[in-house]
Length: 175
Length: 176
Image (tube, rainbow over all chains, first blue to last red; front, side, top):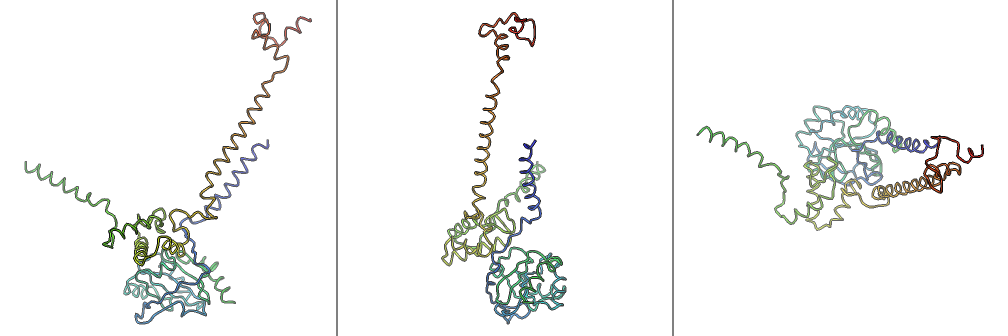
């Protein structure tokens, strides 16, 4: 009578793995940059081509780096959430305008709202490669010492904001 | 006749688009030796957008960007392992098309063989147990053995002289 217990328990273990695996996203590539220094860059700003922006400028603050583009459809999905977050003045959000035309990027911000303190202009995508960007949008949470602490892949949802990003911000701000 | 020629020409013209099939993404450099090296490395890197392709095969924009990055690094004189290291630093181990053999990928590489060997051992053990069980069950009881002999005519049993299927062995009958 106990003979069926072995195959049954093996089945239950496998079913457990399946149940866990079905909740994972196989296309998600976790970032190896977590807890590493944010890669340096020094490029022109989107709005003011004569001014530069670098992660060094944000040292001492907890901030978000949001990768966006005017050609990115999913970015429109998360944009209202970012605009709202900027309005609440919790952390500064710096945009990274990825592989975009300057005019198109500016027009897009005009149309959909601009939550960014400013945007860096990454025309050839090199900054994106340094940050391991493989899709748009992506959002990085960077701490006061310029270390990447969290990466959100895909559009920022209310759920992700409230359950993952905001708590981490609180933690890093030492509140 | 001219109608035939016209339709023939039309038919052949329809084949023209087919001549563009199989065109690769055009390479930027004029240097074929460099391109070969770029493609060799590109075949070892995964395109993170179309994740089942290498950046050599993929036409995604990120793949083109990464190939340009590889080309640039080769022109600067970097080695293949330096370039791979550069990519892994930014994208993680997943960017290598062939998983690296590291302590946390042993299960990936050896797992199937371990399972195979384990299953074979289990099978052999089960078979052995089964064989020994069958062998021990083959010993009949003495009474049954004699009855079998008698029926088969072995050891002096009189095989033709039974009264039909009967559970009573001849020895018991004789005593009666």
